[in-house]
Image (cartoon, rainbow, N blue to C red; front, side):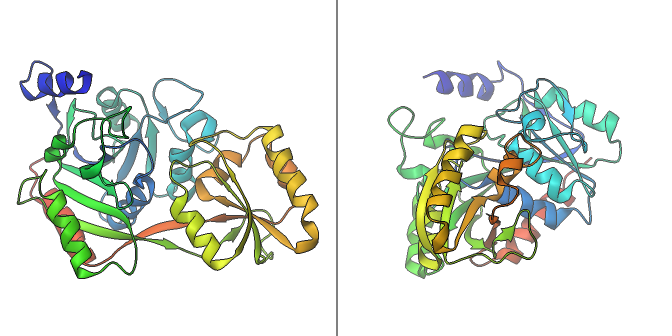
Length: 334
């Protein structure tokens, strides 16, 4: 009821939404967590960074600071949030990374601090109605599609399915690589019940690269793996690890979890009990971002610790998506 009233107030313009002079791309979802926003944002960064001066903007979920922060070398997951910290560690020399609870307030500050910025990527902003983005990208997890989900607390939806109609483009993420043409068409039919006919729908597969050693570049990952995750939906990763390795144990923590010494000690105790089996410890890339430069990093320093990079690739029509985004931005009047 609350989200319905809020959206009605924006739709009727009792609450104001603003078109900005700068180009903006919003990446978000209808569900709570786990649809793969960060890999999609990274895809867009790779796509656009050569043509635009980019800055990403998110609220910096679960950071220990408040207000506007433009990321710098001194920042960590605790000061700007784990996902912005991950983006900064990978792209900080090429783009700007900013966090602020109030995105409309933040954009003038971004333009003051980084006047060269001519494109802002709004991370997790589908519900942020105060800004009308140049392009509004809605993500839907193949394993938890919005069209078969329910509003919280019965399900995981933040707002009603019908609000998918605000999207300019829909991406179904985490599709299995063996999805058939009939499977694509069935999903497309279900998505189209909630979006206008002219809104394009694309499909992306998860791609797992080789695990990366965190401390020791020469280490090779063993067949026996202890998996540690602090992400919303680890099922796809767990399935992949079980197919490729012998998964001894999965330490599952809540999304955006900041690891304590006690957490790491439990992992270390299990590792030492199974050390004779030649074991590696595998974190997600987002988890490693929270561990980096934290108090628990030193505890893991001498262990075979790896992280699993996760990217998305279009199942098909990737070039069509790229052309669509470019066309939307080019056709926008500054």
